[in-house]
Image (cartoon, rainbow, N blue to C red; front, side):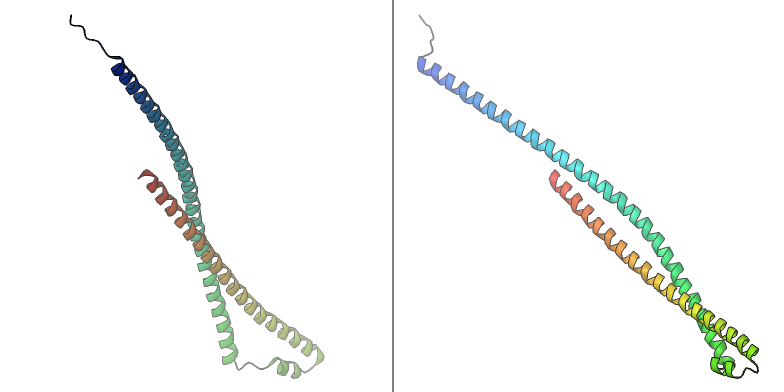
Length: 177
């Protein structure tokens, strides 16, 4: 009688192997679940960073538009300074060519009190005109300096934003490796 029978020891070994395989399977499922969770977290992080990058890109584009506007305003302010300088130079050349007499001479050479008052008004008008030219020139210089500062500040902010974007893009790229 040729009956094959499995010994109790070999049956016990088979049961032990089944338990080992089940344990390995559970461990594999646990690792898979953990990796899946990590993957979801990584995808969320990447989406968040991409959103941040998109916002920064948008802010950079707006900033560059603003920078162009500021540079145009700076150019206008510099042209205004040039015009004011030309006006002042023209006024000074005229005074030099005409051998401009001092205001005191004009007032002292008045023939009568009414002529003195007329000359005084004229002197005040000339002085006011000269003062206005100088005030306009100073205001134009101040505007140029203000615009230059705004341009430099905005340029620095844009450069900083661009660096942040590049760093975040590098971090995303590293996440895929």
